Image (tube, rainbow, N blue to C red; front, top):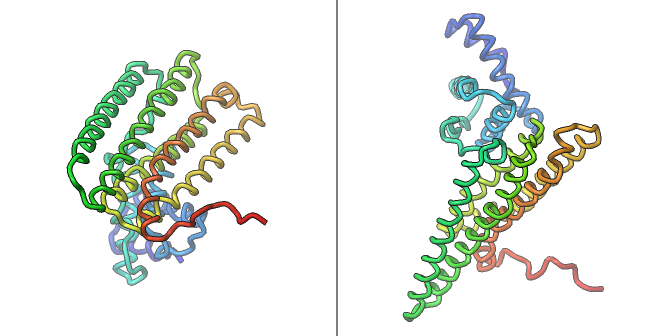
Length: 300
C-alpha cells in the first residue's frame, strides 16, 4: 500500500497547500510509485535506499532538469516523513538520497563534440601512469626489508589494485577516447535512448568503483561479496543495453545505425573496466573460503 489518498488529505487539509502545489506533489510522488511498482515493490515501506537511488537515476534518464529533480526529491522526503509520522513506515530510505549537485559528471566526452575535453581526459592517464610507477617503486623498495606474511600479502594486494587501476586508465585513454574521437571525426550522434543506456551504465560503473575502493580499504567479506555480485549484474545490464540497441537497429533508427559499432564497443569497454574493479574482491573471498576452486563442471 502506498497510502496516496491519506497523503493527499494530509497535504490539503493539514498543510493547506494550494491545488497547484498539490498537483506537483501528486505528480512527483506518482513517479516514485510507478517506478517502485515496475520493480515489483507494492508498499512504500518495502523500498530501500538502493531503490530510491535508482529512482534518482531514473529521473535523470527522463531528462528532467536538476531543479525539477530537487523538487521531486523534496516531495519524496515529505512523503516518507508523513508515513513515519503516521506509523505507516518504520524507516525513511529517502535519508540516503543524494542531491543532483553531488552526482558524478556524466561521460560528457562521449556525448559532446569537444576535442579539448577529450584531450583533458587523455592527459589524466599520464597522471595515473605516474602514480602507478611511484607506488610500484615504493613497494619494491619496502619489500627489500623483512616483512611478515600479513604485510607481504597486503603489499601484493596494493600492487594488484594499482595495476588494475592502471589498466582501466589505458582502456579509457586508448580505447574509449579513440571511440570518442571517431565519433567527433565522423560527426555522429547517439540516439537519446542510446546515450541514456551509456550514461546509466557509466553511473553503475562509478558506484562499483566506490565499492571496489571500500572493499580494498576495509577487507570486508560482505562488501566483497556485494562487489563480486555486481560483476554478473553489470554483465546482464550490458547485455540488456546491447539488446535495446539492436532493437533500434531493427526498426532502422538512423542515429543507432550510424553509431552502432561505437555504441557496442563502449558497452564492451565498460564491462572490461568493471571486471578490473571487481577483481579486488577475489583475494578477500578466497581467504574467507567463499570461492569455489573452479567454475568448470567436473568432467564426466
